[in-house]
Amino acid sequence: MTAKPWLKNYPEAIPPVVDIPDEPIQTGLIRSAERYPDKVAIHFLGREVTYGELYESALKFGNYLRGLGVKKGDRVAIMLPNCPQNVIAFYGILFSGGIVVQTNPLYTEKELAYQMKDSGAKVIVGLDILYPRIARIIGETELEQVIITGIKDYLPFPKNLLYPFVQRKEYGMTVKVEHRGRNHLFTEAIKRSKAEPIALDQPDPEDVALLQYTGGTTGSPKGVMLTHRNLMANTKMCDAWMYKCTPGEETILGILPFFHVYGMTTVLVLGVTQANKMVLVPKFDPETVLKLIDKQSPTLFPGAPTIYIGLLNHPDIGKYDLSSIKACLSGSAPLPVDIQEKFETITKGKLVEGYGLSETSPVTHANLIWDGERKRGSIGIPWPNTEAAVFRNGTAEPLGTGEIGEIAVKGPQVMKGYWNRPEETEATLKDGWLLTGDLGYMDEDGYFYIVDRKKDMIIASGYNVYPRDIEEVLYEHPDIMECVVAGVPDPYRGETVKAYIVLKPGRQVTEKELNEYCRKHLASYKVPRLYEFRDELPKTAVGKILRRKLVDEEKKKLEDEKSAHGEEIVGS
Image 1: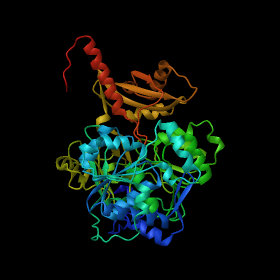
Image 2: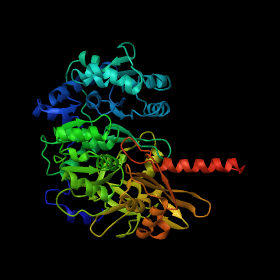
Image 3: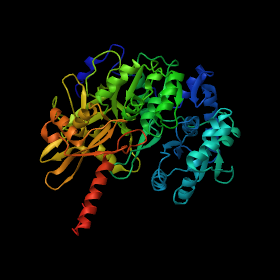
């Protein structure tokens, strides 16, 4: 057992240990529907679904899946944006005894085929415009049934009649799927089923509820096995951390996609378990979100730095009332201090940085939202029931205060392991500790700081350079909207520091000016040697900037240049 210096910072309202019920995650929906059957569970583009309706639809969907042959432990994929059907399918799969496989709707055929083959999913629930993609890969997978729905299926009148025209204009297609053979319509599945509880063996909290695939920035994506207990634990921890929020009375803005575990836990599972209202956003658009905040008055807004940056840089942000927001938990990428301060000034709410991984359901650390100290640049302190330490790289030897090493965590939110990957599970889980792959340190008060990913650290002329140090400085520049720093190949230094910059609309700055600015705020070996201005940066669906993709582009450029000069390329 490690010492826990962070506990002295806990406000009285947060217990060091929270009780985690030994029950499946779908129990949260059952309770909420019993207590608040007429309360709005979901607001979606003008359509509202109550908790009673949500529970009934989820039971119907679960029974339909049982009729299709889904048994306990079978994998069922969901390939949908944030919409009512996603929530219904999630709980319906769990009611049927199945395991949810959340799938990114932006996946290419190759990516989709890989995930379906790796998970062994038998059924997929997909959006109508994705049907051609699903149909082309189904033959090389174990998929037996396809359930199709459309955005229009849960839109109010007359939006449901107009949406097909909008869809044709935006996507250049209209897809019609008939309810026959292996193809099923979601609406028909609900119509033809009964809302009866499904008799199953009592689910074990250690049963897998969700296969959450990692981003796959290095190697193939891995299926993270998250159990009912994992998800329940993180939900209860989140509830304890947000102690000034009242279950049943909050409104959560659901921008974070549910196919990312961050959105799954902090919006879907937490929202349903607490009987809060979820305002679902199928696609992030700053103006649409600002209007939603103004009209729907959300109190909770989990997000990512790129989402907050997108809102802050909208020219009309001052026209909208954002004062309903009480708390925002930012994750998926480092939160620049400048963005945090600006967002809090405009909304008067609290925006704090948290930390987690797919492997931890996802949250392990966060800054205190209301009472207690918040430290600039820190990911905060460990959540209840959670241990954290900094290990010497490649070992389980704990380091002292302020020493940089690999952050490791232990707690009931830590995954069961990787799906069908025992060797990789063994390499990541050591005596109950999850090795995160993130480099960082802990200060004397128990606050943790991420220096960078192990794989993102730049070694330039023998110096260790951490991209986050440089990005923090660049984000404070008045002309910069977004940036990312990466180490790119250099024949002399080994690696050299390159900054990719997106400027605010209408702003201009030269490389020379940025160089002078960085030299005032950074040690000389950290100053970027190269700058590249871009209109946008590559990102994941949750808004995390894909640094590795930029590095791969640089390597490809270098190889092409060598090839053009007839040099031999040796693969590493």
